[in-house]
Length: 176
Image (cartoon, rainbow, N blue to C red; front, side, top):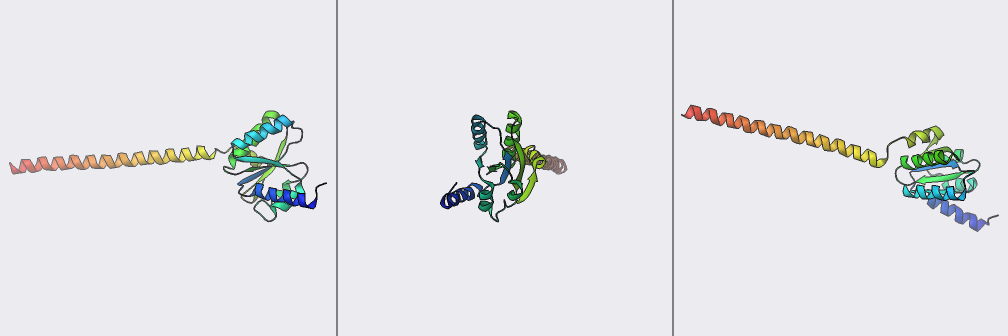
């Protein structure tokens, strides 16, 4: 059994773990081998997400009144906590894909922006495009809009030049 000092250390580590997180996904990873667990951690690290297994009571103390307070409803039984620090959709996608691939473990839910999500909501979050895909889509839209504006301005300038040329020809005809 951990001493009070060790529990205080763990709580401090958990507070650090949850700080700056955008989303926390709660899973039950019962049945995963050490190799599967290690592979899962490495896959999550590529998405700037981290995995931590801890006692639910210590997690509840660590989150206190933070935006992840809703974890209290999800942290029952053996729990693993995945914190995504950037794009909330990417860790959800990685978790659902990995657990589907190995056919072990379950997603209990998540907390995003202070709101609890159930397992179906996490699957919905996983189906969203990534932050990079959304940004490239927006940039493509902005670029095509800018090209359209440039085309319109070019046409207006060309029309003004043609009109000026026609006026000049008309004035030459009047002057002769």
